Image (cartoon, rainbow, N blue to C red; front, side):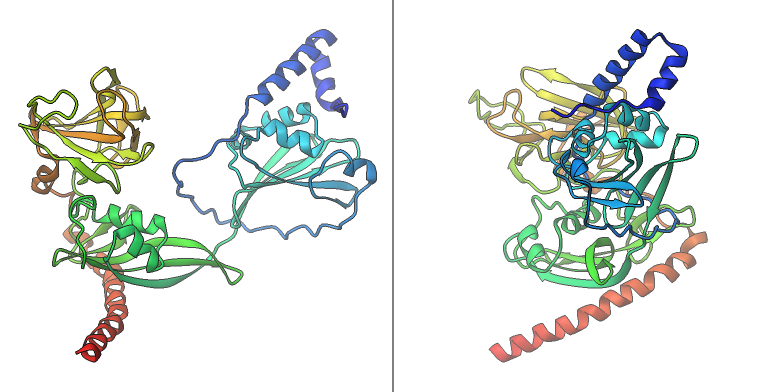
Length: 456
């Protein structure tokens, strides 16, 4: 087993203030702390904020390394200006200590980096697939660490002349191009959306946009259709991802809904109808993205377990265990706990008149007293309590009385529309997007018409 190198700088600093035995104890404590930093996997893709900083020139690595250095790790290595360069990829289950150990760097060096400032705390939240590049001097001291979050962003920690680590963020801007997709529903939104070339994230974004008008678990029919324009991102000529939906139409049971993306003068971005009405209501139609209604609101339902007539005061959505459950609207958690009948549950108060309830959760993600936003994940679908299988039982109360969740939302008001003072700005931004969507749709409509004529 390789003996770990001691960091003379760190031990020297400890020696100034502590007896040697105390310094050794502190070093052991720091090692134990480092072992607790585990890699975490995010459940939802977070939005990044771009910073206008330039990306440094990539380092050209020479494929040569001293034999003694190469023997200490299986990671790719090279030598640059007297420094040993080691590259590591984060694996499932890795701790930060694992990565440093594979790179041949002591835990004392790792602790010194983690103590350098608040920016270093992000190293405790690594994601599998991310890459780390270490630059190590001949004494085994870490001189710099680069964390490659993705192909656009890189964070760097470099040791300066005062033996402190400096933090820098480097970010590139991807090129964006407009893309158009169109499809008719023959099987399901996911199946036909995927065939049309939409990613799962874009399909879910489209369902979110129309979530106040269309119940995607109940209202979708064969023959429904959609058209959408969105941004595709490219880096060095290669597609690396998608941007947001810019404009979209969805025809459901013969009725067409349209939405366009707009960023107002305060910097807030939302979706609106072409005439400036908000697509967002006070409550979304369903607290799960895609699911199947297994039991409707029914005051005289026959209970599936007890076989007696008991009111079913909500709607049951059958979905796989672990499916995210969202808050139907902005509000405050008034109860979050467990009971024999309800299993894990969350109750949310929305203003003075409305309460929503979420039962049989597999896990709760919020606590009593916590403020939540519309579509914030509050738990996951499960089968706790009196449940025959994984599903969400969802209730909606108005002034203390149960209402049918599938119909009550349609009667509630939408969020505020674009004010008159900003209407001119809104039209300037959004009318070109709707016109562009219509131009894309015309060739597709003409092609469909030609195909019908040829069949006749």
